[in-house]
Length: 64
Image (cartoon, one colour):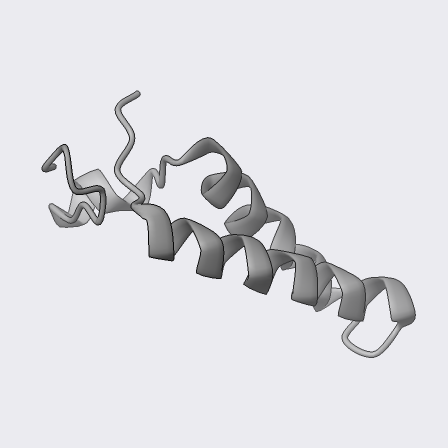
């Protein structure tokens, strides 16, 4: 598994994931807010399984 999620992309995914999870916990956007686990995980790991399928990489040192 090569990294294919770059720096800014990772930060945005983590922030969006935490925001969605926070909305789910507070009950504002439940239960759909739990989908925030996906961007949080892909941001934390640095790999998005859909990027290779689309031929995309935002990581500066590798290309899909």
